[in-house]
Amino acid sequence: MRVPVPEQQKAPDHAGAPCRWEPARLRKEQLETPRHVVSVADPAPGRAARRAPRPLRVARVRLPGAICNGAAIPTSLYFSPGGPLTFESSPPQQVPAPPLSSQEFKATAEAILTNVEWVIEGKSPTIRLALAVMIAEGHLLLEDVPGVGKTQLAKALARSVDCSVRRIQFTPDLLPSDVTGVSIFDPEKRDFVFKPGAIFGNLILGDEINRASPKTQAALLECMEERQVTVDGNTYRLRSPFMVIATQNPVEMEGTYPLPEAQRDRFTARLAIGYPDLNAELAMLDHRGEFNPLEALKPVCDGEMIVRMIATARAVHLAPELKRYAVELIGATRTNAQVRLGASPRATLQLLRCAKVLAAMDGRDFALPDDVQQLAVPVLAHRIIPTTETTMGGNDSASIVADILRHVPVVSQPGRY
Image (cartoon, rainbow, N blue to C red; front, side):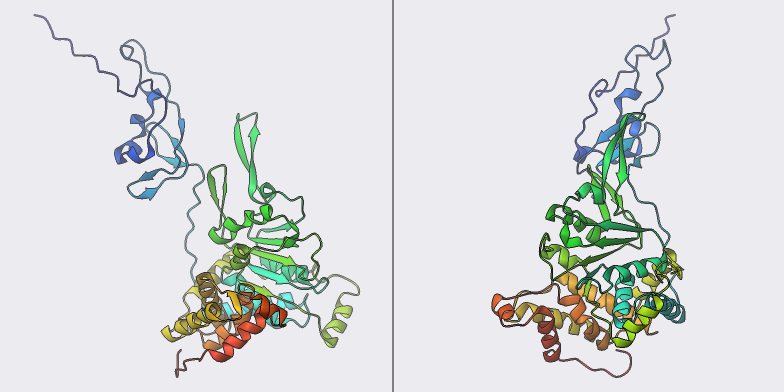
């Protein structure tokens, strides 16, 4: 009796074909079982019974703009036959930080303020607003004349927190790759390896930011808004907390490039330190006679504590009336006859975030109109552009915002606002 011989399994249709597929046509079962995708894992027809298949290899597939079941897939994937699908630059999973109590938040904020005030004499309101911007997950622009302590304030705030601090000295020959990073070919690995730039840190000190070319300034746009860096099609997330503290001189225009509107709008607040008063300057002479207090400055908290303070500030209550008041303030900058370009919706979000932080620094779990009014000029003045007639008349953006504060009514409510 003849025993029927089973038919030899036919090779799949994609055997021997190059690794090119339409990203939109990838099915869910193909992503979950990558061995059906990579053709190098299947033996050639007629050779399965004669010899064992070669070891499985990993095929690297570039999928620009891939979409699967409505979810975006990164532009660089690794398909491993029989193994999980791994992403080349996926961010690590971070456990949400537990919030602090009102007393712990206030005590930590006061410790940071005291530490910075030991270096910067007589500028408590400015230091307080700078710390509020940090906890609000914003970015700070220090704009003032030379020699008043812009860089010292940025360094003192950075050294008060035990985290990664990077400094970028902006010069005309600075390249975007110096900021974000660059892919360098490694002869040993025979592949390109990404070398992170100076932007990969927790606190970034950008000194004289307006001395860099617009091309280099534009490299900060994605970092400041989306907190990520995209190089060669790969996206790298920046760790929290992340803050950019930039300084610039508004008086000297030789060899400088004005910041574009898109970048100015990404700075949460613009602060001016100003000259110290008589007593503060005399105290500065006494403290800096023998040593530099900045070198002896010790951190009072770490980056994890700042993350917990951020989570605590987010939980501060905002009454509907307060939200409406903030929206009316922003809307008044867009309809004012003296303003050519008003504040954006991003300004509304950042204004209320900073108001939450000021409330938490005072030990409150709810914000007040006073918090919004205190932040209006630092948060809005650098975002609006006055008309030419207004500038020639001697009025600047700060005076316009102050005038808007006087005309927009505040809705009062007893008790918790």
